Image (cartoon, rainbow, N blue to C red; front, side, top):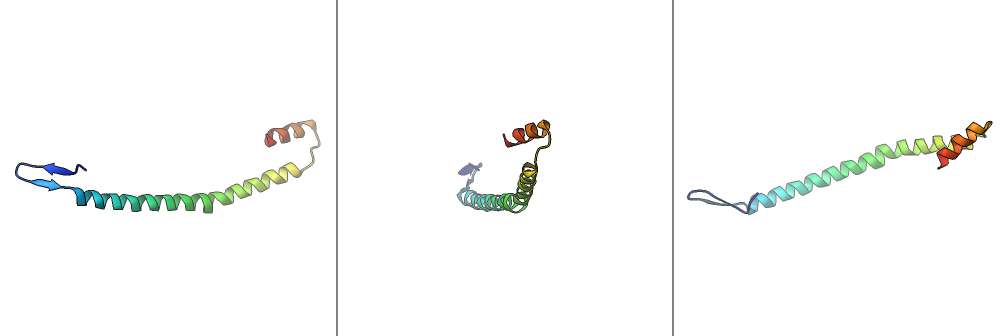
Length: 77
């Protein structure tokens, strides 16, 4: 908001409103960052760990054909 609003016979100073809006926005930003962190570390971390385990298990299998070696090489890259 502007620092002040001029009307016909009134001058409305908006400093207090702006300060309150900034405080509320900072609280909202903190909440959003907290939820994003929770999502990444609590939910996505488990998926990533599981996918890494699957890849590790697949790479530990012995290749029986040349095609398997090519697939493993591409996966490693």
